[in-house]
Image (cartoon, rainbow, N blue to C red; front, side):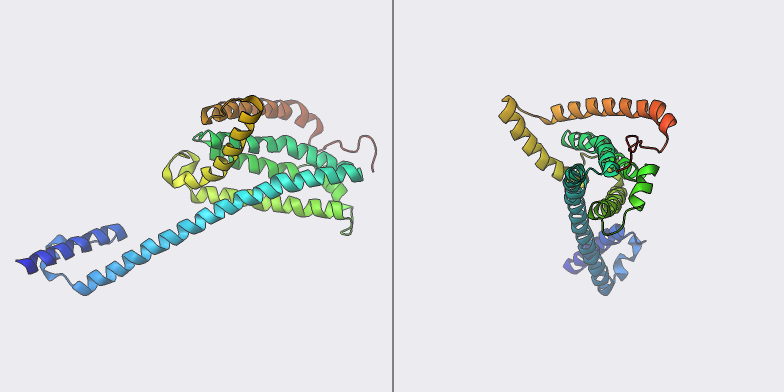
Length: 261
């Protein structure tokens, strides 16, 4: 009786593992159960669990690294290039960076929405990085101007390298988001917690800053409200530019209206 129960327990474990692995099984084979097959499927199960854990760690590390790179290449280096171009009085780079900062506001808005745990915040983040990439390559007169400078001119060379890096970061964000496709609509799910971690650190910083200057609490609902209001204003501004300025100027940034440097 004990032997039969042991076989049934082993067969039940075998059944669960096969269901998890997607294999077809037949319950009437319970008396013909092969223990070696159970061991084989147990090894497959352990391998699958281990592989899933490794991929999950790699995914978390990749998302964390993407946000760290965005801090450097979407905030740090553009700030440096802006100051550098002003010092060198390079009109093309100054104009490029001024357009970049206007477009990149959407990225900061998306961070507010991530802090507020807005369900579609990841969609806004990807739209912002794609718009940023378009903005640094869009202007024909700036592209022509940068092409005329030699490799030895460090400001424009650094700007060119930065543009390619921004493009890479944007594509990386998109690929990472597609690998976590459910997070496009359900950012609050447990599987998407890694996307909220960088914004959580920012939330703590803004909360302390807000409390220091205004003596009030900066909460997640406030962040969500400010993010949605800012998104509405940004969308209206983008629509206005698309209807009025884009048809008039096209891909010309008009940076050289006051003469070439």
